[in-house]
Image (cartoon, rainbow, N blue to C red):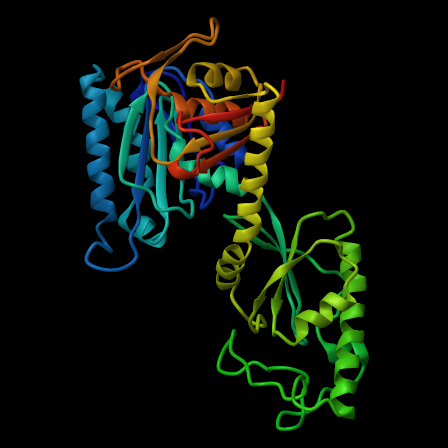
Length: 412
């Protein structure tokens, strides 16, 4: 994956740096997040901007980005940066963007991260509040839902009698997997023709575009010999498909979500040997459906599974608290996260806790307001937890397990 935009110094003054610009990333993964948490010299600027899709503000994004840049520019001026250094600091951003470039990504969020010799740009599928932050590390909390949710993956099988596709899905992506040997049609698999339109046929066939269908007539409308024969042949076809899929999915453990006409789904369940098929399913004609439309339906459909993961993590946290391996005090949790002890971290969304942390002594300070040396301690705890392969859950305030504004289950 493209890692964003690099600024490569060639020596001399800051203003003489050669800028190597690549395309922005449309998502952000754990490796990107880890890179953004690394300590940096000098000032770090974080810019967040929602990109609108409709209404009078549709083409206002370039103006709003320019205004955000202006606010960051003034903040750096107040910190003493001047002249060519200021211009060089913003050069990657200024070279990178045009109105057409921003319009291409309407409907997503935009986040940019600038430091001396460093520039990253992402268009993740999140709507951000408009926000500028200047500090000695990047402000990353708005990205936490992407990172915490983005670690969970699912398989989505779009079933049809004339098209079968398998996808690996996360919050940010829907990637089609290769299916070598899997028959694409029931006719090809069984070496026989399906009935013509106007006769009795297997299932809803596409009509007026993907996601629509003509009605089937043999399931639940009689059950004569022809209907039973059709059902037997579809089951036979799905056994062939599943046999080939098992080779592709031999090492898979992710939950499998089915998408297809409602008549087909129970037949595939009967035919399949995969051990983790979700009870939830998408009842739609998936043949020809766009990947984006299927992704939106599928991600909403697995919400019960995502909620279950949070419930199980909370239960694990409560058990750890009872055994002395949990904490809900900021002064204890932040050092524990920094030293790799936190396995699960729970934070309330939309809140900041300004302060300072000394890595050597483990000392935590709380600041009543943001100061020049302040960091968001919740942001810091989340970044350190993720860097040490822990899990972070961003919850509504009322869903937090305790009322202290932070909670953590420890490894030891």
